[in-house]
Image (tube, rainbow over all chains, first blue to last red; front, side, top):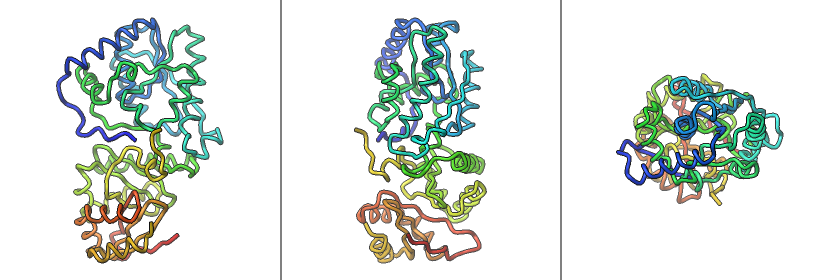
Length: 288
Length: 75
């Protein structure tokens, strides 16, 4: 399981990190052209900017895969980054929720999602003559439990950030230097990651989770935050720098009201705060 | 891993509550507003007890403003 990147990096770019960026640019140049699965998160946004810089707009394309598990806020961010930097993007709908193997939410759920995503993107790359299909996996991700990586491997999707050893922290530093406004934005994995393995993923549940997280942002919750789905109960994980303030009785009731407004009937605040992959811990799943 | 033994340990610590076990998640339901404040204040101690009793996550249920006494649910 990966650890939280906190505090998010604001340090200067080191010579070693500079070297990794040069290696990334050389890696991309050697491919000649590429199509990227573009979520709008820090990793894929940084990779898109560098790839556009190296390859140019005619030999690079970002593709946004949209489904109910992809937060709308993330989609807005992806479009904003693309508009600002002139990144060529197209959007494709993905239908992983229609796959009963995905909807049943097994521990390898991400495999079926990525198989659907890459199964749609790889043909687009072939039709348009792109030499490589890329994802935004970074060097830190390799230590996490990520069954989706197997689907990428099967379809020969490459991970240049990981290939050159760029960590999340380094990507944040480099993104900041390139003027990417979301360089310090909390990670925003797919909404299905809030539902425990074995509990079915449905559109209604994803919508409730997304609405609850949006309502929490609206009352002032910042930093890393997740609403974890436990049937009638929403377990709210807050940044460790904020949790004590939100455990104040009045503040916690604002949390409750916000989450109840999204359709949950009970609300609990996790006393340990945000943990990346906390449902993996609950399920006893570890990187392997 | 037992919700009942964790509950007893928390009460011994001074946190008046009920514990609802959901697999490895323990949901702490405070008896009233004062107990909820105590659980928050003694957060690190409650987490230590949670781990000692085999749970991986401990969450404090937030009761409605109008209800000092949260409902008790058990699996």
